[in-house]
Image (cartoon, rainbow, N blue to C red; front, top):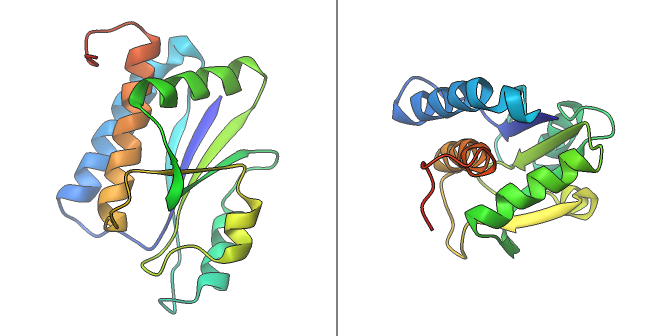
Length: 156
């Protein structure tokens, strides 16, 4: 099952993009035997900033056909890391070919995108910089693969 992390805006050099690249590379290496690859990080244009409808259109264009969509939203469900892993495994086992995680711009996602998302999840009720959210999603994908592979990376 392919996993796409689609985010509005471009990350320049810095620790956030390095974390994303590291976790995506780790996930791709570890996920092969679990049929959880490829993992891709896709950046879409976010100009002009704050144009939620244009951002939504760009995220939709970056979403593979028939993809299960998961929107990162402060009002979404809170999942444990194990629940995150279980959902990825269930979708894979149900024949879902791709899961796309949507990360909106600085002003959040357009209502239309929220309405189209199959699932909405939150990393708590706080507002997080989307640079960090990319790293957090990338790490959780890697962690899910480690959980499903029964490695000692995740400790309950």
